[in-house]
Structures are given as C-alpha cells and as structure tokens.
Amino acid sequence: MTTLNSGFNHRGCFGLLMLVLLLSFNANAWADSQTAKDLVKNSCSTCHKFEGKPESKFNLKAPDLMWGGNKYQRSWLLRYLQGKEENLYPKGYRWDQGSEPFKHTTLSEAQANKVADYFEKNLLDKRVEKSFVDMSTFNEMEKNLGEKIYRDFSCFGCHQIKEDGKKIGGPISVTLYDAGKRYNLDWWTQFAKNPQDFTPHSGEYLADLTPLQARYIIGYVMTLGVEDFNYFKPWETEPFKKADAKRGSKVYKEYCVQCHGPQGRGDGPGASGLDPKPAVHADLPLSDYPDDYLYFLIYYGGKSVGKSPNMPNWGLTIPTQGIADVIAYLRTTFKGN
Ligand code: HEC
Ligand code: HEC
Ligand code: HEC
Image (cartoon, rainbow, N blue to C red; front, side, top):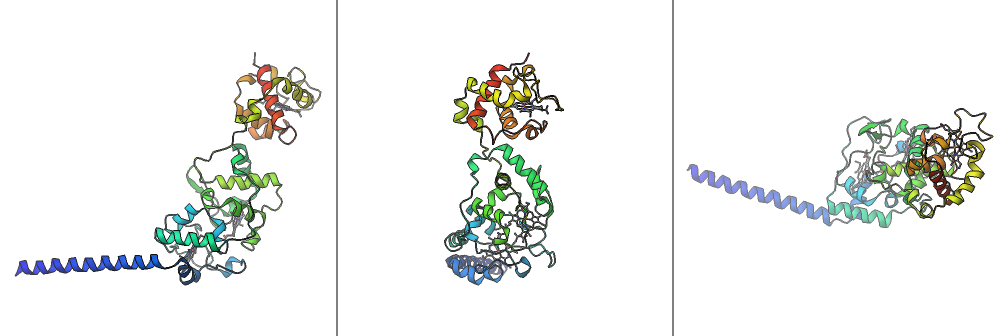
C-alpha cells in the first residue's frame, strides 16, 4: 500500500512538474512571439509616452521615450530591459509620490532585442544631430576640466556619480555614474544644448558655457563608468614625431622669453611683477619632464597642473606643431644643473 501510494505520488509530482515546465515554456514562447509593437502598445505605454511633445515630469509616470532610438547605447538598453541595471532614479522617478522601491518590468533577452530593434527603427528624434564632440580626441585634461564644470555648475546637486566606488551627490534625478555606458553621445549633446527639448523645467544649467567648455562637460559625462576609456595622447601624434627644436627656439622667443628670459633664467621683462616668479628653465631638468605634464602645462596653462595661473594657456594661440616644437626646444636646451 505504502509503495503504491508513494509510486502514485511520484508520478503525480512528475506530471505536475511537466505541466508547470510546459506552461512556463509556453508563456515565454508566447511572450517572445509577441511583436515589439504589441508589447510597447499594450504594456510599456501604460507608463511611458512614445509620441507627442515633451512634458513636465509631474504629468508623467515614467521618462518619455519618443527619442528611445537615439538616447541609449544598445548594450545598456538590453541590460536595463532584462533587469540587469540598477534603477536610474534612486528616489523614484516621481519622487513626489511615495518612496516604494520601484521594480521595472523585465524582459527576456529575445524580447529586449526586439524592443531595441523597434526603438532604433521607430523612435528616432530628428532634432538629434551628430555631436560636435569627437571623443576620439578627448584627453585626460579635458576630462579634469569637465569634472570641474560638473562641480561648479551644481550637477552634483541632483545627479549622483561615483568617487572611489562610492555614490556621491544629490539623488533627486537620474544617476550619472555609468552615463558613458548608457547615453548615445549625439543625444546627450542635444540634451546639453537645450534640455527643454526633452524635459521641460529640467534647467538650462549649461546655457552660458563656451563651446570648449561644453566639449569638456559633454565629454566628461561620456567617460563616466567607462573603466578603460582610451584618452587621446596628443604627444604621441604626428606633429610630435616631426618636432624640431630649432623651430621651437623661435616659438620660445616669440611667446616665452617675455617672462622666462632669453636664456630661460626667469628674468624676462614681464617677470618683475609676478609672484610666484616665472620658472628658471635653466635650473630645471626639463629634458626629463613627462610628455603629458609639459603638454598640459603649456596647452592648458599653469593652473591645469596646479601651478600659477600666471603661466598662460597657449593652446588657442600656438598651433599643435608649435607646441611640439617648443617642447622639443625645452628638452634639448634645459637639462638641469
Ligand atoms: C509601471 C510603469 C512602467 C511600465 C509598464 C514600463 N516602464 Fe519603463 N520605466 C518606468 C519608470 C518609473 C522608469 C524609471 C525607473 C528607474 O528609476 O530606473 C522607467 C525607465 C525606463 C527606461 C529608461 C528611461 C530613461 O531614459 O531614463 C526605459 C528604456 C524603459 N523604461 C523602457 C520600458 C519598456 C520597453 C517597457 C515595456 C516593456 C516599459 N519600460 C514598461 C516605468 C514603467
Ligand atoms: C536642480 C536639480 C538639477 C541640477 C542642478 C542638474 N540637473 Fe540634470 N536633470 C534634472 C532633472 C529634473 C532632469 C530631467 C530628468 C528627471 O526627471 O529627473 C535632468 C536631466 C538630465 C540629464 C538627462 C537625463 C535623462 O536620462 O533623461 C542629464 C544628462 C543631466 N540632467 C545632466 C546634468 C548636468 C551635466 C548638470 C550640471 C550642469 C545637471 N544635469 C544639473 C535636474 C538637475
Ligand atoms: C606671462 C608670463 C609667462 C609666459 C609668457 C610664459 N610663462 Fe611659463 N611660467 C610662468 C610662471 C609665473 C611660471 C611659474 C609657475 C609656478 O611656479 O607656479 C611658469 C612656469 C613654467 C614652466 C615650469 C613648470 C614647472 O613645473 O615648474 C615651464 C616649463 C614653462 N613655464 C614653460 C613656458 C613656455 C614653453 C612658455 C612659452 C610658450 C611660457 N612658459 C610662457 C609665466 C609665464
């Protein structure tokens, strides 16, 4: 009796298991066979807007997705839709409506790919143009300058980034610590130019930047979360391979002697009123100074490397070849005592 019973039970369990497996398989297959269009229309649209004009977030349940095809890097979008990313809004998108931790719908990999295809095909925003920022020429000093703008222009106040692995900054809007893995550069540039195009009342904090400063902050955000970002190294480019100390001596006469003096003794006519005094090149082993240090010092000025701001930035005055040449001159002429 006991044996029979347990035999029956086993068979019953097995049958139930098969049924559950079959059902869940069928449910997945059914969901996967749903077109992305249906999914977007029947499910996503209950919270997100896919057409119409941008609106104040206080009229929305979730971020607008009319530009969903321009905004994200596909790899990020796929991870997010599969529930493999942290929430973007630490206090909830609508922080004014309770603070229950939000759990976003998750999709299978196949569904996520379909949705991404659908976005890329149907949700392109014509206002988004090719960015004026070329990230392949973005160097580490530009990142530093962008980081400074991030602090000075209150971005920290509302958007978190990470420092030494720890999240810092106000959590009220979207986190930006992995922005470089999330945004499409063109979309983010368009947003930076005019946030109102996408989110009314989000603030035009960047409106009074120069184009160069805009490059720094836009580029900086695109490096966030990109561990192995490949910074451009100008000192490894052609002009530096062709650098000529003789040509450099002319550059030195024209731009440097006024402060540093004809023999690099720090006694140019402009030196008298300066404190600290212009460096005495004749005493410095400039031949051994690192490439990046000399380049950044001369291109972006003393303050970029923690020296006096009275050492000017020459990047906009002297062409790259001239900077390469004057560095070659410094290196061959000043070898320390
Ligand atoms: C119950 C409401 C709801 C539904 C349904 C929903 N979402 Fe969302 N979605 C949100 C909220 C809220 C956020 C912001 C969450 C966060 O903090 O990460 C969000 C964020 C997103 C984002 C990132 C937006 C951005 O740029 O900041 C994408 C992309 C997205 N959802 C796609 C979808 C897709 C595709 C579907 C349908 C399969 C969907 N969502 C269904 C509420 C919803
Ligand atoms: C007072 C708070 C506040 C400050 C300060 C602020 N932002 Fe925002 N930011 C917002 C809000 C609000 C949005 C719209 C998204 C949302 O609903 O939170 C937004 C949107 C963004 C977005 C697009 C988010 C997305 O995925 O849709 C980026 C990128 C961004 N801000 C960057 C910056 C930068 C860079 C600065 C500094 C120059 C800055 N923000 C300063 C509140 C702020
Ligand atoms: C307006 C005056 C002025 C001019 C012009 C000027 N410099 Fe300087 N330079 C300074 C001052 C001041 C310092 C010292 C900064 C300090 O000690 O904080 C300095 C320091 C330096 C140093 C030493 C940095 C170090 O780590 O000690 C180098 C190298 C240098 N300048 C190169 C140049 C070159 C090359 C030019 C021409 C392209 C130039 N400078 C033009 C004022 C000037």
